[in-house]
Amino acid sequence: MQSELHVKPIVGTEPVPAGTASPAHRWQGHWATEDDTQAFARRLASSPAITHATLTLQGDLGAGKTTLVRHLLRALGVQGRIKSPTYAVVEPHSAVGCPLMPAGVPLQIWHFDFYRFNDPREWEDAGFRELFASPGLKLVEWPERAGEFLPVIDLQIDIQPDDMTTSHLTDPEQDTRRTVHATALTPTGQRLLEALA
Image (cartoon, rainbow, N blue to C red):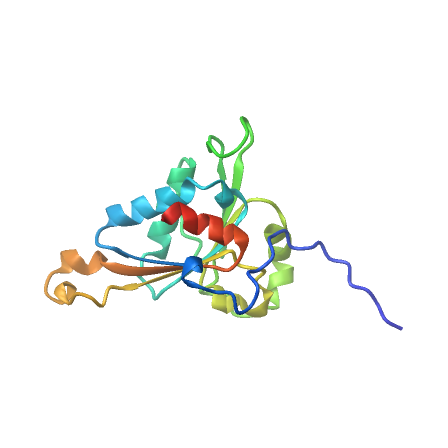
């Protein structure tokens, strides 16, 4: 006897068809200072596609993932303290005055940090399926720790130390230099890339 598993479908967009990735689906840039990170966040926050998207943030510890999230949340209108979800795994936020949303409708945002996520089977127990199925913005640090449970990703952002300069070795002030790659994996991600151009 075959049973049917009834689960709430993940809300999202269809991925870009395999084999169609092109330079048009990628963006590369450099952040010399935190102001560059903030400008990048503001451009993302200007796109209506951000209101229902899943973004992953990849890079080593200290790469600037949480800094980018903080600037993005501020640009979207989140007020108050913005905590890192390193220990809680997820931090919910609500942008009440987000200009991209209809008047009086808050933008729901979930910031995930799977760095301490040990067992992907915890996915169902923690209710992550329901969170990803709901409308809003999902920002995911350390997505590889969630394994196959992570739903379709719209935009993948990879932040790495800038190898173009070695000045950070002698000047700690230059340690903020980063090379950033953004890859669109869905039409939603493509619209986000257009905001970065």
